[in-house]
Length: 433
Ligand code: S3P
Image (cartoon, rainbow, N blue to C red):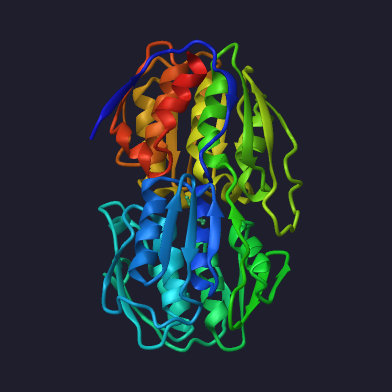
């Protein structure tokens, strides 16, 4: 574990391109592995999480060729005599892999696999995927009925109608993937819109698929046909730089090549409501497109005021809510987030982490059951020490807090950032030098 110091910085200035999107990289590789023809994935994210996906697919018999920022996935087909039956698949820290992969494996009659990962993944629930996949006919066994390791015994699946108990793109995606292998059709509905990258890819892979608001139906299919996938920049990674440029006076950063899919840009709308200056061609909320919209954002520092984040907004900003807390600590007035209980089962308990972490840096912040309340007076945080708790996004939160603080921040466990963003420190320093 490494520590890093982030001293109060001068303004962030210049052009910035975030790393490739993690969610889309995982999905592109997985869908590529389910195809019969090779699928080039351009700008595949090079990070610990997305390497776990490539390693798992290799173990399942797919081919992976890497060249610069691209990978070519040589798939084994949707219904494959998957190799490594009986084997252990190590997902590392990757929750998305842990939740999406069982959707594919569950539909392979006769196959048996065990999915396991690091200490953090072992604390994260998998009953949320075991339940719908069991209802479809597969057999799944989780430790204490709830946690990894997860054993998946594949079967010929039957389509179901499933209402998601929590808005989760990971669970939704798992059921949709299983639905491609299941007899008949499979319908998933969610209570609030979560990220829709899987839906967009299904259409592009020519899978029979229908969207009716928050109700999605996929039908059984023989094969997937996917042309190349070009992965746009990750708005969740970019959000750390956007927050830093908003908070550090005099900053002006142009973010290029970033995914502006409206199901990922909730944070930008919340920040703008707080007074942040973020100009760009965001995709209109409610858009049902098949391609990922990519664009530019022009961000300048601005004074902020508190806001209320409603539960319906939570899924489109889920990974950025810790940054809403940080903006709230620098803003004038109260910022309140509710309906975000899911934060308790992310890579760490992010409600506990952000509340204890920012309090240690001087913030007035309290947790609630399903969120937090933070009060600021428009002055910068004092600074101090924050523990990343092994969570990549908590590490980067601490770094941004340090740049904007009056006294600097030491982040304990900064190396966790490599899970999604290995070049984070280099990119930030390039903007402040
Ligand atoms: C993800 C979905 C989100 C998010 C995670 C990535 C995905 O989780 O927090 O970092 O790629 O589908 P849930 O939708 O399960 O909350």
